[in-house]
Image (cartoon, rainbow, N blue to C red; front, side, top):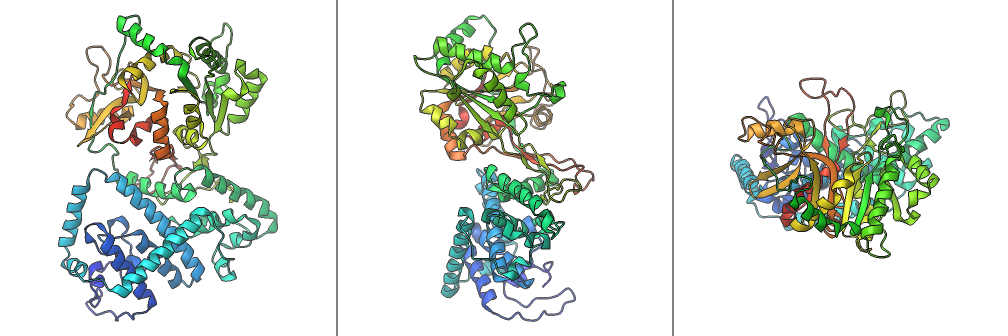
Length: 607
């Protein structure tokens, strides 16, 4: 029964040998064993390379995690979670819930792993074959003919798991919980379940049934059973429900699953750019007033009247010593024209001079919980600075994402308050998901808008280069164009870089602290250095982005606007097990090129 014993000895059906050399008692065969055998057989037949399913996992006992040499399929994870619950004396309904959650978590991990291994199938097959050849018993077991009765049981179990997964996904009501099932929840949660909505109850139970060390029961274990705390509990559950609805990649459980995977990579010290070779990207550089500048700008002026504008305005001006929203700051002191007034008046000037008759150029503003009310108040108080109200769309970021205090992605509670959790910003990469979920980009595409311009809250010079950048995008057929500035080598600003890996290519922003060591590791002994122009050949990213709208909408439809995330915990110890402070997952708007596929990847450039 000790998982440290060779897994394959157990799987081959041989007598188990304990550490002292004695034989363990032969295990009785019952319905549970038959079900596990069936799942094993079905998963083995369907798996790449014929890897056998880990029997210890099926029994809820495998302690090797990702290091296990045998298959951890979603079906096997579900069976293992169910077996573990039943062995702990939990109810059948409780075991079913645990199995469903385990299935979803494993399925999510499998999807993430498949994406990571894309383009490396040959190497993966070789690794699988090597693992199989190292275990003759595995080959022996793999070649055994499937048993029809067990195969039927496996198919039925898989259908049952899929049905349960769909039921959770669609929020369909389950049968009323039994007293036995509720008694397995933390007492403070159990006493208040009837005070929550059905959706909130499901979230609480999913969190309590997450497998192994990722279980989130700690969130409820400090709750009292006093009726006077019910309002606080309701507020807590409403917050969790809001997080679940706002996170685009699988809700709250999806966030925690992604976090566990990324935190594990961070602990191992994995470099996300490992294997990628940097080079200078394709783009256009101009000197103001030259013939090339004027010709390209003239070409772009023909497109200015077909632009929609996206303002990223989720931040306050606190670091500037200003208590209000940053778009309310003055652009200069002579007229004290605010940034939002300057932006809107500039867009209206483009509309008046370059847009077709009757065409309004739309503006979308992304706000946060900190800036939303103040932004709306500022606009209304100034009659939208000359725009019509229907020209402006406001999309608000969610309340953020939960802070995490360890490598198992345990959610951090607010100090001295068991009824509140710590939240942190998810990053401005949310803008793409918001434009998709609110239908903004698709609506604009149907209104004669051809381009989408992303700009920042306090960059008054941004529109000076718009026509030039539109000319470059039109001439080069770009899906995405990053407006950049000259950058000194090693300057603390992200750099636009072309990366190659086998037959894969992408041009993306690489943070300055990653670029220099990446160059040194790939044949550039001096790293990031200035060229003959006195600047680095890798231009500086300022997050002024230009998209061809029809292609942008196509990518949003495929990806739902979900950007890749990263995590950057600060560790206290050399083993990377203790955080200095809670961390969170983040995403950035400039990482959009990472979700481009096939021929799309060649249609990114810079100006």
